[in-house]
Length: 116
Ligand code: FES
Image (cartoon, rainbow, N blue to C red; front, side, top):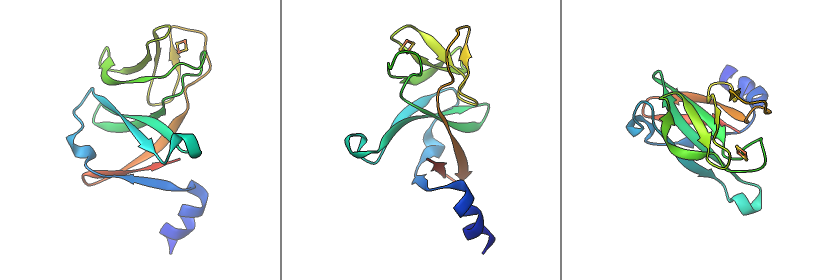
């Protein structure tokens, strides 16, 4: 009952399986729906043992944040102008830029739910 009630406030979620295989300090790109039909792509990453999700769309000039090892073990990066973003809150590091969009992630065993 409460889970259903809270679900109304959290918005829709997408279950992603097998995230326990994502190593610390790494990230990977995941498509949620068809990006050509209103879906999105996220960068799911693990830092300090927690999972974070960042939209691939860079808030600077529309580049794409890329997956791979986290820069300095902490940040996702857009290679177009080498801006770094904190995946925990989307803040640009060392640059004046809007925040990258982040999504709430709830880990459940070896899977997770991303609230989009
Ligand atoms: S467009 Fe991403 S850093 Fe400039």
